[in-house]
Amino acid sequence: MMQQKLTGIERGWWIVSLENRVWLPQGELPLGTASQWSLQGHIAQPIGEWEGETVWLIRQKMASGMSSPRLLADRDTKLFQLVGRGVQLAEFYRSHHFCGYCGHEMEHSQYEWACLCGHCEERYYPQIAPSIIVGIRRDDHIFLAQHQRNKNGMYSVLAGFVEVGETLEEAVHREVMEESGIKIRNLRYVASQPWPFPNSMMVGFLADYDSGEIVVDPVELICADWYHYDNLPLIPSSDTISRRLIEDTVALCRQQ
Image 1 (spheres, rainbow, N blue to C red):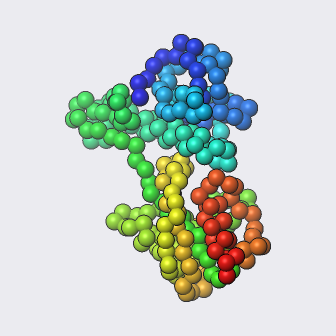
Image 2: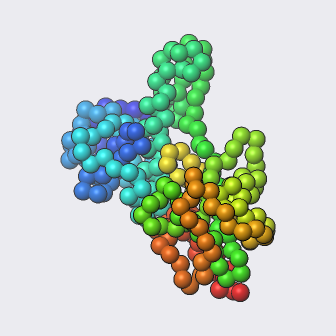
Image 3: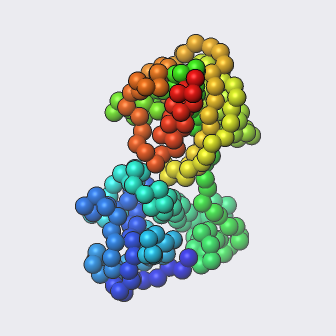
């Protein structure tokens, strides 16, 4: 957790991040010594380990090469999670310079990921927003939608944030009804995935179609339909929970 000023001899993977962007010179996460990447003199802190090397976080914006961490989503899952951790921590520290209760400047804890107020003694931790994502099967078809945020022709399953006072299961039923107009049944948990866009924890489910006709919410979706499992449109890349839910649903369709 300890921050330190880099001398140049420190070695590892370098997550240089600010404002939800990460430095990817040549499209890759930098590996090597701090001096190799001209990072000496910067303030850094270790946030993990990958492939036997320390993973360092530097909270700064570089002049060029700042990219979306999505570019690493289809790489190694552990690496993507570590980069996501770095991006979220950088944004957490950037947005917590001052205490929200008394307005005094805060300090970083040396023992945990937290910001401390020495005036009112309030303690802040990075907040994680729970989100649900669900694959829906109807006989040998899967429900897929093109989202307003994905105008590249890609289709995926439905997802949304959990609201205050709501269970995960209630959030799934509500989001499905609001975005598609259909009802589901036989809801069951599958897996979860940290998703740093900007600070989500995606909780994945599978469900079966129950009733209703598709009525698309135009605010959220461009279009949606039922697709036969062997004739799917463009879907998300591997190593994402959305792709896993699609593949799991396709496997169930094949058993029909």
